[in-house]
Image (cartoon, rainbow, N blue to C red):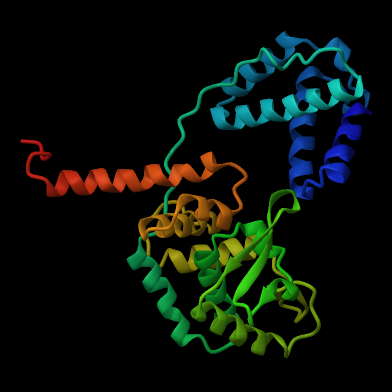
Length: 298
């Protein structure tokens, strides 16, 4: 039951989200399946480095991306680090395993002109659903919050008098993000429509066909963003996370300090934020090639 003990540890002591705990569980169960072991009977003492290497090779042979394989290995590393700490093993066999290299693509983002088109719908919103959908786009764009953070919002997290939102990020880490007048206005409109509905516990809700009011789910949120942004953008990838990238890129392009962006986005490491500087530099290089006569190819 050492796997369950680890899952309880990250859920209770480390306060990882349910989704994160489930991801660790799935990764560890997949390793057990490769070894033909029942997860409840997993014995770390009969597993060695070659077992892990063989599993990673099989994953790559199955056309799993290097990024996915790297995540599987990361789960194993965390698991063995825990077992070493509690004395279940006397050495960490994952230490000598080399992660597969991956090419990190630059984050995609919407152009400011596309965002202006998407947000132009706000003036036409005149019912609960249309106002809510406009609010979702505006809030993602103005705050850079993650999808899960948006779904976890409650009314008490919204402070209209101070014009700010309290966001609980990964590992329940709290941050405060300021908001502008346009977002405040939309929130007030949304709450005006929502007060006619039955009491709710989540800030964002949806109405089922039966008329029941329930918290918004990730599929509904994704569908709303995809539907709106595909009307104004030709990007192949359209999701709430692209709006998060757009927030960061817009802030950086308009002079925001990278440390400020790190704080607003809830990044634990500055390295996670610095990827946006590469995006901006790519834009600079493209502009330079187009504008400077000595940079143009003959």
